[in-house]
Length: 294
Image: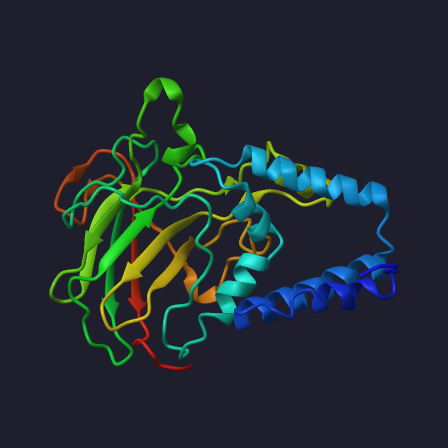
């Protein structure tokens, strides 16, 4: 491997992987090296630009912790997350479309009974959500796990509010429910509002340099699991939001846009009396049977 030049280095790197016993790893790394080298040649990458890129990735790593995943934000804002999601979730047209997970999912969220208030003190207008989970042929899916999470009216998720002084995070606007025998579920939370992704770090500086905004349209996250069906990770977006056509992470799909219906003070869907305006959201989810192709 002596006297390698800019013309021969790509083949030298590829040859160094000849003894790789993992066929998939070798395929991925071969393509990665080829594309990286081709990119550097195409743009005539300078040493200064390379150093800046290394520093950028270092900064992304430094700001990442158990509450903030800057690498996910980077992948999201470059469209890579949505590309990977789309190409791995091809399914029949009647099935609910998948979209990005985002950086704010938390495993082990509190479990609630249907009808419970998931907001747990999160600020926002009251919102009552109803839905049904069914299969491709309309069959009800009972006991499906439905993870739900969202930001509050100020644009913050509960994980963003955690400080050392508070100790463990107090979950709010987040929870897990189980569908009933007819596949239905319902809960109370708060109205979804548009919010900016965290932009006080390297990804924010990148967006600013590219003349892009950090805003996401109002949405509610869902992660639905049921035996015998493909797992669904998706959002439901609020119709009329100004950022539907410029989502910072490219996650909007027309089939996922729904009206949040505003109601004047009065009787809520759960029978309670509301002294302030409130909203309702109804959305049904269709899961693809495991192993079914589009």
